[in-house]
Length: 238
Image (cartoon, rainbow, N blue to C red; front, side, top):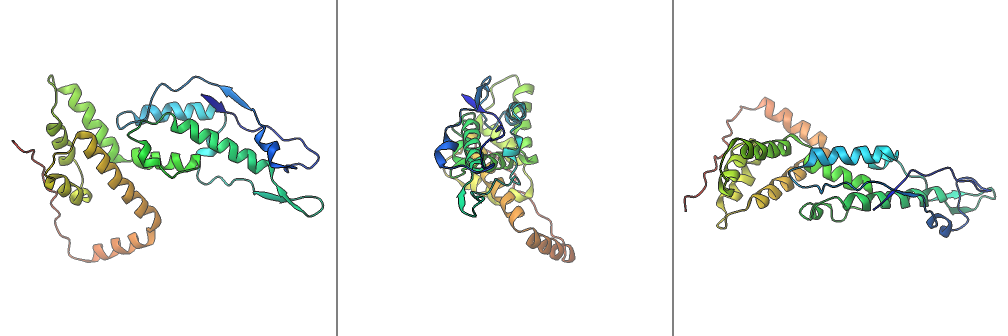
């Protein structure tokens, strides 16, 4: 797949402006690079992350992964004081969409539903990091590696799920209760997906309401502490 390169300076009679939108779309500044032979799933985030970062830095495009990057204005004033479409914005948007499409092409089908509705490269990257970059997700991956490397026999899904649920912190008590109470046994992939969704929601809540979190933390520190017991999951013998 074609990988976009960083924009080169634009030379025109009016720097930073486009006389029409078509000028911005006729931009063939792409080079072919080695395809990343890894599709992101719940087992290979760290390796996938490393490959993507190296590829992006090779073309000096890391600013498109940064949500704090501000795109150029959509329109600018000409020397005559007339608003015109900004060529720099069109090229930035084109570059961002190309990189976002490239990023999605290396994500497995199991992960893609988490990225629906995200349009910019920074949004996609931030969502992936939120899903896989936390301590809880790293713990899930370490369980899988440990179980496969230290056992000489095939591990059943129920044994695998038991190890995962028993290692979760108290924050996941409600989710654990739902999984345990289900009449239909969850698969390993199903449990992993539920936990990733729960973790993503927690991250969003923490990011959007930091002041509320501080108030709750203060109230809890002044109240009588209560012991929270995380339910221990035991697989059914049936």
